[in-house]
Picture 1: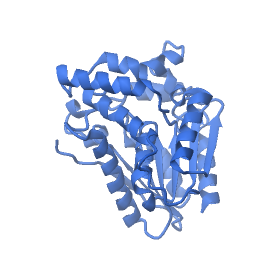
Picture 2: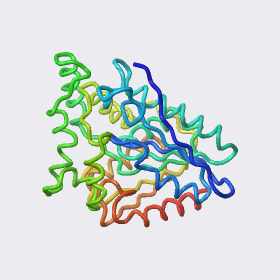
Picture 3: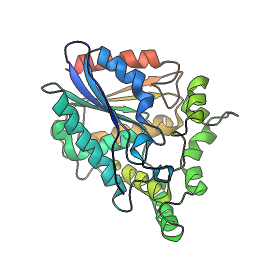
Picture 4: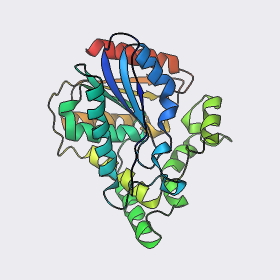
Length: 294
């Protein structure tokens, strides 16, 4: 599969304070982070956003949406995150480098931290999904469906077992209401042809294997146990698994060897805190956090 990664670079207006790579979530694209990236650049941060493999403008046609390759799909997602990290550091030199990952992007950010902590000065995880034992069962089903139906085929069963769980957690007649209390944001998401698509069978397998990778503390190359990690999430976000799921996420990071973890929850937000009703508070909290950890 030929891969062309689409990126956007945001240069700061004033003196450069830091560099940030933004990794978007499942079934969306980099342009949804334009306002946040502009805000960060206005505050002195150089930012790169990009469309991951199988997303946005990085696909050649719609059949590639939610597909990351015949083999080693998750490894490819992490590889391009690493490659873009190096590019970000090369463009914005001699300043701290931070990784921001939302949802599935937070899974990739954690695998990036696991393998390449030496290049990272801080991590921000937004709406991070937590690991649960059912993940391996989902992988087995995705592998079976890939073998029987084909890796590029799509299964409603796999969707129901993943995103469908989040959708059922929020009682609403509006499709994808679990993403946000902000109705305009949900409307834009539902109307965007590059959002909300169902992953391929192989795509689900790869995503779920990422959850296993981030959860497995073996192989974490911890250079600095006090590396700053910020977790931001809506309190009404079903993806984080309430207090139990959030505790699993925090404990996984601690078991890996990281001790400097801060959690910020937003009372009136769901999954997409950057696009929900409290987004201004989230923006300000991120900047304040970055200011403090320098």
